[in-house]
Image (tube, rainbow, N blue to C red):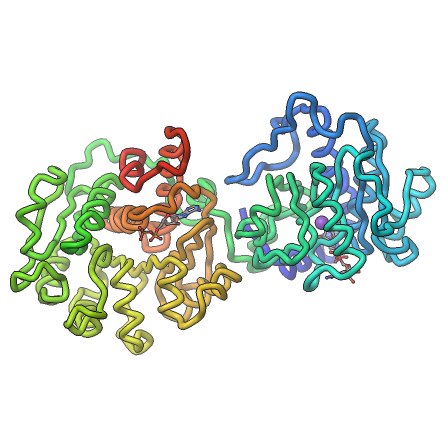
Length: 539
Ligand SMILES: NC(=O)C1=CN([C@@H]2O[C@H](COP(=O)(O)OP(=O)(O)OC[C@H]3O[C@@H](n4cnc5c(N)ncnc54)[C@H](O)[C@@H]3O)[C@@H](O)[C@H]2O)[C@@H](O)CC1
Ligand SMILES: Nc1ncnc2c1ncn2[C@@H]1O[C@H](COP(=O)(O)OP(=O)(O)O)[C@@H](O)[C@H]1O
Ligand SMILES: [K+]
């Protein structure tokens, strides 16, 4: 399923209306009716199974409690002056038709509505649906059962102005369930940034295609459960019009990335069929990072995994994970990667099918060794076609080198896995700015540097060197614990060794890693008690 910006959605709507000939009013009617249908299902607790809408992967079904929502009281339908308001007016009509009482609250004088929204205003008036214009403090929210937010949609620009802002604040403070039309008012549809104020919805019914902002934080939280309602947009149109951002679902993995998450293992396969990973990770202080990474590579299905470690550590790691092969690297007795010869690592890697370097590698500052030179020498000595994952401290070395743009390019076989802090070091942008537009920043970096970039954190973004982006819905905050990133790097390397192209390996790895985290969290009393090692058994 594609994820769209407001501008892309407008293009898709326009094409549907102008080139295909489906009248705008038909699209709007479908949108408003789907919105009403969702509210009715919450009021009557009839569930979603037979609804003509898709529960977005990563969204939990809302719990309407024993009694259903609203307690028979009227639903307040908040109507803005654009088409989003028009959707709300259509929903109000269908709610009334289905026996759910409504109160229309216009944010601005109804004369200000234009086009299709004005037509819906007139219809509502002729049907004598109860309506009034918002005045601050005058709404008795305690008399309402719930709220439909149809104030601002994809036509939003900037922070909601008055009187929208005051109305949004009152709606949030009412404690009532809020169902948002298309997106919560105050949400930036492209980036997921929330304005002050922004509607806090329990449920968002988004029309046609999910907007990017619904799947990036904090927007994902403001949207609550997301249902995608079809409104008549032809299948395949988004791709035809050049949309290149997807939600990472099993369908996307299969159909867009040709990476079936349930692909069976070859019945006559042997360990040589599934590739050999070299893991260069772990120092004296952080040997566990290497162990987690290497074990994850095994669990991802790689045929063989060799764990290269500084010689000093090798003895103590014998038997730590019996299935792993250990490869000591000469370190002058220091137990430190930067004392090891990168050419020796490159020579070892050249005989394998993928290399992951970085977890627990040790930082440059204070090491007394020039770590910048170390990584560059490794980079240049590796066979260009060898699939490579660069994680953690290796990314910090890269950032400190400062001249990565001038390093020789590798073909599409290179995956970087930074968290926002590491990407901040790589780009020179503050982490806060990266979080403000994760999709945009990741796409730009991957395109510019010709790598597959995995920007970690809630709703991880995978960007490929050709401009395509995938947003992962799996995973949970229990995974915010040391070592889960090392597990991810190992999984991706394991998939690379099995022959998946860089982006497919990164996307499938990220999806499976998050899903393993979800299974592991479900087995614990609280997600807070999850530790990275728990993921291994769930991969
Ligand atoms: N075009 C189409 O074919 C369809 C559009 N649909 C609906 O139309 C919406 C988009 O409609 P519009 O483009 O009319 O835009 P909106 O309804 O999102 O809002 C535009 C209006 O809000 C005002 N506004 C913008 N930013 C504001 C701010 N910060 N504070 C206060 N007021 C602000 C603008 O002046 C304008 O009057 C979609 O989100 C969707 O709900 C759906 O009905 C499906 C079909
Ligand atoms: N709130 C969250 N929701 C989903 N996934 C998360 C969340 N927090 C962290 N993760 C995932 O956990 C992993 C953490 O990796 P990282 O930050 O590198 O930690 P470490 O270096 O300690 O292993 C990443 O894959 C990240 O996407
Ligand atoms: K809205």
